[in-house]
Length: 440
Image (cartoon, rainbow, N blue to C red; front, top):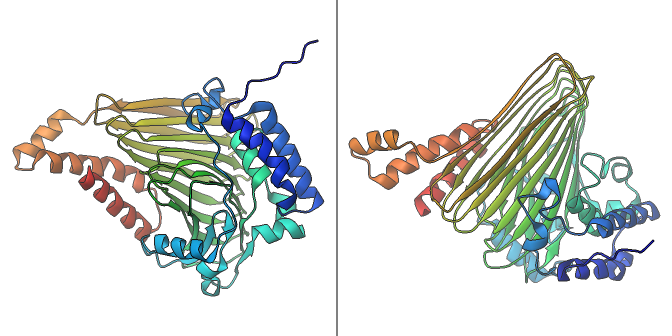
């Protein structure tokens, strides 16, 4: 039998040659080293995802990554100073900050002393080297191991943070996880493990930040393990620069009688893909997975989610809003899986898009896969222009066209923003929407 050697792109070849060079310098016990080798082996088999892989049909990462940026070095004091300046431009959420710079935990830019009682943070890089229990028990357990982006992160991750909320802790102040990439074009692979104990409640604000004009390549993974009777608000803000290519993965495992809301907001990077892997592990829980993308120019944003109803008596709601101008491209791929044992599932999924230009493109692919017979599930997708009759109505009452359009679009996006439970964060994002519309 003849062996078939796949043709590799320059980016794939660079990544494949890089791992043997750097693996000895990456932190980890022998068990972690084995996990890295296994993850890298999976990537060797598949390479970068491309349009012939169904889950990546509309976001061809092989085409987007013509070259593989070098892995970011450990941040210097100069890098930390640049990161501090970038962070100063973020909204003030009154949060306790946990900061990661170039994929490494940055205690000097974190407010560890401001963390409330019952909340602890550990440097993931140190945890990988010490065999921390959460690394052993949790890392890679909340998301699909066969995904190429996740395999790359597992192979190259050098640091990040482990955040633990003790059982029964009601965290009044938000906790901000801030991932910053600075310096020349580089590749970063940060990761966060978040363990939320039984009966705890917390608001998490996850921000990813880099400067305009620098072609960073970010591959970020956040895994949340929320126990029984927890209440979690998770807001992700993609503030990467306009030349960045960003692939982010969120894995969630939700216990019983719990409530979790997660929201993703993106406006600026050249190309972004946010993939969510959500699993119900306990009965009588609810989840809201939502987001908003506001894109112009030639920007590209992909939301791909997989909601796994693995137990009965759970409800999920997915609502996504997309505003596309210029030659921007939006993607929504959503799958709700209802397993045979997940009777009395209530799942609803909706993607809505407004195209402001004839050159804008929206790709929608909502799916239901149901193996139980006592469920209430539905999905839908809409794509269209602004309502001309409503626009005429507003202009007839004296509003200029641009102001009338902005008013309609703010209301359109606002429906998705309503899912955010934290008033301050919701109001801040409403302000960012208003600023984007004015700039348009």
